[in-house]
Length: 428
Image 1: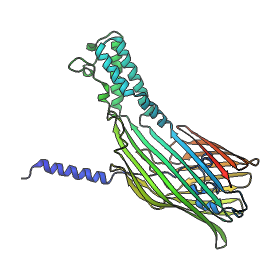
Image 2: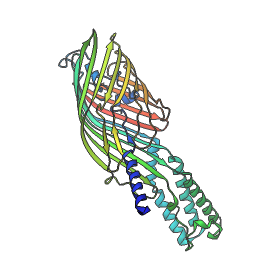
Image 3: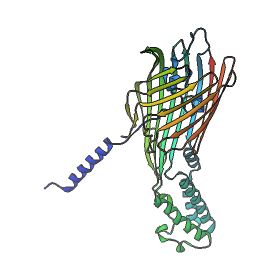
Image 4: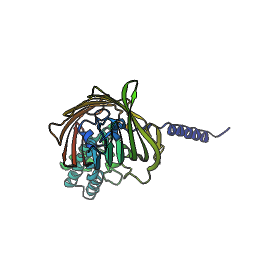
């Protein structure tokens, strides 16, 4: 008869391998890449212009009248900086800077050396700080989405071209705090309150004291964890667009072939596992991909557009078995535009699976731009998650042009997120 243990071990290894092979993949959202779109709720598939078309719908490059040599509608924007973070992300950074687990361990060591009311009060204070952090982060999604780069665009007469280079950095995570961790903190808090009031170790729960009569460090009993994923997309892209006649209807087609570097980081860490190890848990990949778009402008003021980013799907692994999937992301938009006023609506056509265990989402947005006089643009937007999981956000923006210099700013605020954008440009 064959021994049982090797068979059991083989079955366990097979099960683990199957689990790794079926590990979930995380995908990437459509994105916000410039200050104009951010100020308009990230609308750009139909309400975009030739300046930012390369990011949202390259077909919009062809929605332009006049020769490139006789107009000053070409733009160079450098730098473009977009920063967005969830409130939970900011709280997580603050908590990491406070080193709450280290402060708690130091307070416990001090108590074990003195075992008096004052040192018990220090442990109690450290536990209070830790309890507050648990309340702030418990089962909350953490998100970060930044972009920095530049682009240059030159529209012609019903055609156009553009080039961009930039890096988009996305990070997502979810802190998981089991109820037993809250119970541990409460037990230690109650014990320290007893000693701070004049009691001794004999008066508290004996399970909190080791055989040598020392208080056990509560950090050893905490099992909270965080699941983290991060992706850096560095892209070089060249866009071109042309309007052609399709059965009597002028239709613009555009494409942006691009070279892509993808840096993937993925890690799950327990509360007591120490610092995150970026060097051992990220991997770089290189690939070729592209974006495509189509737009129809009719009655001079109305537009319908659709675009797909990263038309070729790719799976990218970190050094672990987890994958980040660069799936095609499709978005549709409609817009009304004239020389004084623009309004547009965009909607994701597919649901986005985030990076590290957060809930999936599907965005819709509305944005407006008002140009009351030459040289000034005022913008506002609203973005929401159609699944109802993520928070809504409002945004505002401002652009000012003096001679050939262009300055654009935007600000975004949601119930649990905040962001801003700035870009400097030159008209030619």
